[in-house]
Every structure is written in structure tokens, then in C-alpha cells.
Length: 372
Image (cartoon, rainbow, N blue to C red; front, side, top):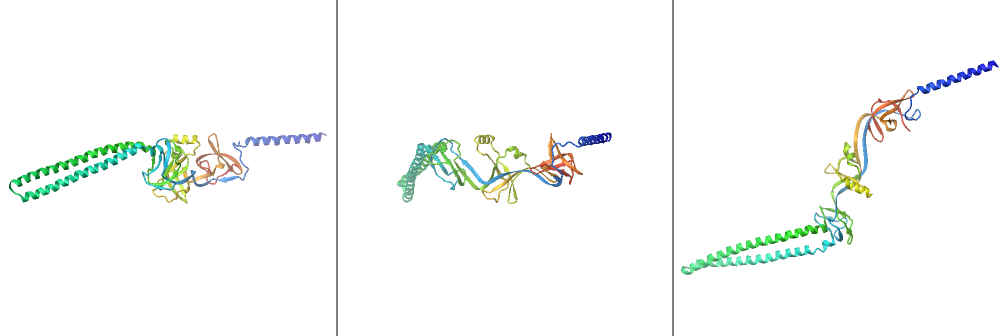
């Protein structure tokens, strides 16, 4: 009996010593800030290239100007349809008030009548001068053929005729000057009326093709509403997903990629108020870019990748993003040292969606554990 008790006591003592040994091992092991997978899920730090590039979908479109009326009204006539080619200054549409503008018609009629009247008056004086000159020639011939008292009287008549011609020619000049003054006054009046009536019309601002018509006869429109668009297919630019100006300005490079080629582009400035209004109205905003090159052989309607490159590095030490942890602004990895997970602090550089540049803390070939 005593022998059995002694053996049992020895077994209890051994079990107690074993438990103490396990507790000491647990206290000695490093605390893992983030759980990692079992041994075998590791990668090695390798040398490579990296860039932090955001890619957006974009489309090549023709340079387009959206046109609108300068006043509210009802559409009377639309002179064009989509696909029509137009010249700068061509009238594209008119409101009812413009189509019925009697004041404009009256001034045009008055100007035409004045021009016709002036032409008749000038023609009459011109004929009078021609007759006077013909009479002068007859008197000159008579002077040559006469003598004595008759010759003197003819010479006197000739001088009077010459004076009449001079007076008539001066009268014609004066008459034309007065006519031009009156016509200028009518033209100024017409311009004022036209400037006012221009609000009733939409005219093309450039040579091009009508790419959009959003109105028809009888439709009501408001000031500034884009109802017609004219495009110049010879001028191309890019429309892409909206990017705020701070993101664009932060980028080291902005370009599009197509068929293995890269083309540098520059973002157009935009009005933040307009963008805010569009977002509040559930209208999708876009960002627009111009090519820095004069000639780009990409067809209109082609979709391309718009790239904003924030930073890049060549021949740098890289790890996959799922191998690097961040906690309280400290970056670290779990380095594999002879099968042991060793928490190792690292300094990050460029980061993109796939890789992280390791500036310090590891060397090429170091093996680290990765997250699931």
C-alpha cells in the first residue's frame, strides 16, 4: 500500500513539473499582434519595379460645344438634325418670339428701301453730270470754230458750264456722304435690334457636325439649357470618370494607354459648383482631358485606360500587400527564422493594390508569412 502511494506521488510530481515547463515556454514566446497562417504560407522579399497608378475608364470623343438659348421661350423652328454639317454662324434654331420679330423685319425693309432710293438719286445726279460734260465738249468745239464777239460769249458759257459740273460733282459727293450717314444710323439700329433678337436664335459657334438635337417645334426651353451640340471631329479629347483636382495634381504623371502606347494628357479645369449641382441632381459628372500631342491616331468612340501615376520605383525590394501588417502607424511582418515567426518592423515606401515597397527592415530573399 505504501509502495502504491509513493508511485502515485511521483506521478503527480512529474505532471506538475511538466505543466510548469509549458507555462514557462508560453511566457517566453513572442506575442503575435495579428494571427498568421501555419508554416508553409510564406513568400520571399524580391527585387522588382512598382508604381502606384490609379486606372479609370475613359472614351475618346470629339471636341463638342453645347449650345443654348439666351432666354426662355417656345421653339418655333429647328433648322438642323443630328448628322448635319454646319458652318460657323449658321442659324440652328429659333424661338417663336424671334420668328415673329416685326421690328427686325421693319428695319431690314427700311434699310433695303434706303439703299434703293440712294441708288436712284445717285444715278440721276450722275446722268446730270454726264449731260453737263457733254454740253461742255460742245462748247469747247464751238469756241474753236467761232471768233470775235461770238467766241467770247461761247467762252463765257464754257466757264459757266465747267462751274456747273464742279458744283454737280460736289453735290454728288455730299449726297453720298449724307446717304452713308443715314445708312450707318440704320445699320446701328439694325445691330441693336439684331443683338436683342439674337437671344431668340441659336447659331453655330464653329464649323462642324451637329451631334445632338434635343428640341423640336413647340417645346418650351429655359435660358442656358443645352439643347443642341456641334462637334469638331478633327479635334479629339478624352472624357473619363470624374477625378477631383487634388488627386490629379498629386499625380506625378497623367496619361492614357491604348494598344501598348501611352499618350500624355492634361485635365481641363472644372467648376466645383457645377459638379456639386450635378451630384445633388443625381447626374453623373465627368472629367475631361486634352492630348498634349497635336495628332493622335485613336478613333473617336474608342475606350481607353486613363492612368494617374502617383509614384514609381525601379529595382526596389517588394512584398505582396498581404504580407505586411500595420498597427498604430507601425508596419511590420512576421519573418520566418528557422521555422519561428519573428515580428520584424519594416518601413514602407510605394504601395499599390498588389505590392508594397520595403525601404528598410528586410533584405532580398528574406522569407515572411502572408495573411490568408
